Length: 267
Image 1 (tube, rainbow, N blue to C red):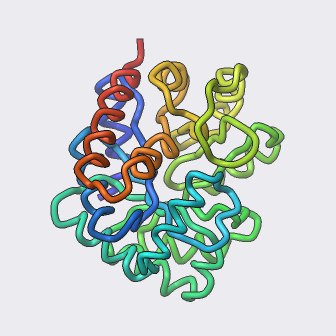
Image 2 (tube, rainbow, N blue to C red; image 1 turned 120 degrees about the vertical axis):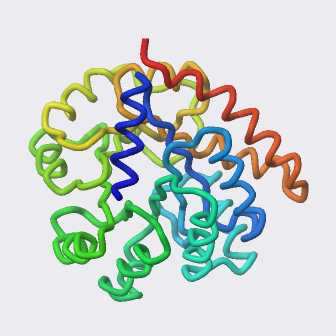
């Protein structure tokens, strides 16, 4: 079953955008991370994006860097990420996409990695530092394993490259609404609708928007023009603000989700 496509189809039938929730797997530890994922799913996450903790997360701002640091310090590694996914699959069919870096893929062997992703129950992979021009072999093993590919488009990406990237995507496109690294922002880009229109001219897969989305009005603005909304640092901060108090972490996460999800409805 293509769980990713099903999530977008279901949201479209409900006249709303998809909610993509990002957290770092294993933050602040494996058991707490499982509880975090459970809460996010219960509160209406449509797609769960799990960051694979890495020592050099170059695309991430301080919030997500510290989350990866906490996860690594607790003993989190790739096999425990797959364990987390398998445990989520015991109670949920929510689509799961791994947000990772190529070192972590290549070191396992491409075919072996794609097989582990699939057997654990994940649905797609976003490899931040693997450009589509160099991804042919990985795309082949992902296709064989039934793992969807996700690629990023930046505000500075020219149209000819947008067209090329769209041809490589089998899961969804991730438009980075702000230049720079991940992190909460006070406002989102003013040219968002114009950029989305250009991307959608070439896209055959859904387009989601992330980086900096943290407020209800951000969600409403993005949902009006995109197929999905990605919220990451605003959720990760719910963990960071309450370290050592799991009940408080889950309570703040639930409140944040309840505040943001109403903005998904398209008017």
